Amino acid sequence: MANIRAIRRRIRGVRSTAKITRAMEMIAASRMRRAQERGLAGRPYAEKIQQVIADLAALTEAGQALHPLLQRRPIKKIALVHITPDRGLCGGLTSSLNRTIASYILEQKVPVSVIAVGRKGCEFVRRCNMEMAAEFTHLGDRPGLMDTQPISHIVIDDYSRDVFDLVCLVYARFISTMVQRPCVQQLLPVEPASIPAAQKVEYIYEPRPDAVLGSLLPRFVEMEVYHAILESIASEQSARMVAMKNATDNANELIDGLTLLYNKARQEAITKELLDIAGGVEALA
Amino acid sequence: MPGIRLDIVTAERMVYSDDVDMVVAPGSEGQLGILPHHTPLMTALLPGELRIKRGGEELLLAITGGFLEVRPDKVVILADAAERAEEIDVSRAEAARKRAQERLTQQRELGIDGARAEASLRRSLARLKVAEMARRRKARR
Image (cartoon, rainbow over all chains, first blue to last red; front, side, top):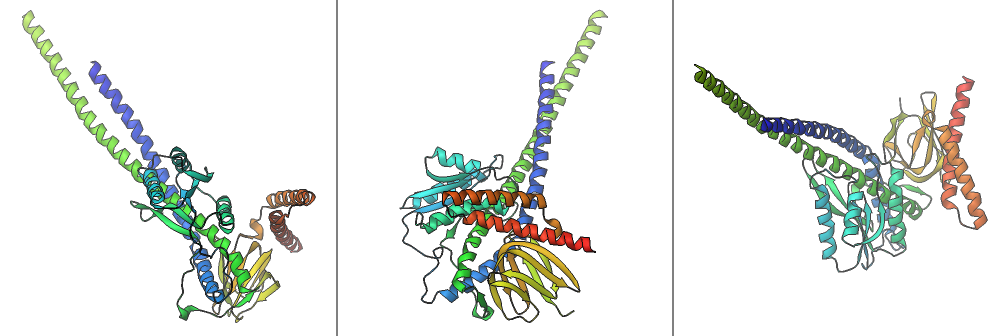
């Protein structure tokens, strides 16, 4: 029975696909956990540096020239750091990121240049003929701060040389395992958070406050970029995990349906054979 | 034990967190030792060795620059990278030192300001020095 055999082959095929998607789901789950942990590990550093910058910015604001990375200028050119996954199979994550950046660019009245991080974003930017200032791909699942520094250096250098007047990060914010939201976050100029006066401590600064601020700010920017990349990795992996879980569920449903069909066909064939035999016996008698 | 809380954090992880008796760090204006009840201070750190004294023992770390903050209740070190002496990869640091030195001499010949190469040279030297100090200390014991 050709039909029965075809169904059986189909079931076998779907089952092996389900096995693959199941494995991918589990890999994504463990990578997601790791990315989350790394994101959390950097949090004390980020909080500390933010606090110190707020402190220092308040101190130096009076009269002195602002540090170049704090300077607000009329916006003539914008740069977007577009952080996307290198690989696909992660549901609608890449396309929603690309949609976010495209609609953001369309809203702007000034030229926008893109620094693409991740293969998916690079391809999109190239396909749409957007202006691309730089591209970074294959950062891997576990980039260190060192790996992300070239990105921050480009941004810092170009901002201080007045090439860009506003730099934003576009990445998938990790909200929960089920929800990742694309967001546009301002990176430069740095907006120091204001801190309540009660928390202020009078420090001795060594060397002068503006010198300390000057060497802290680039680190802060590096930290922000690094953090955004970690977060987008966590988002990518969780999106992939969910997509793969859906795929596995669908495959199992398909297998159930096909098994039913297969059994029906088998039963039909047996009934037909029995009828044939019965008919043959009757004819002989 | 009346000590002072010390946290060493880098962007990637928390390196150290414990109560200590004294911290000696390579400040940008010179070596500085922090004892409990130090006045609030904020300073940049240079690449170098960080010594932590705790209950008669001394712990050595290499740091590659960063910041030190003294608050009334604790000391926080924001390090670009920090490694305990035993974690240092000596061969890697040695290779980095050679590379930086070569680049530096090349750039000198070309008349380029080799700030980045110089910084990386200093970082690798700090690592090597700490590793060497730890090795000698072990040998003495």
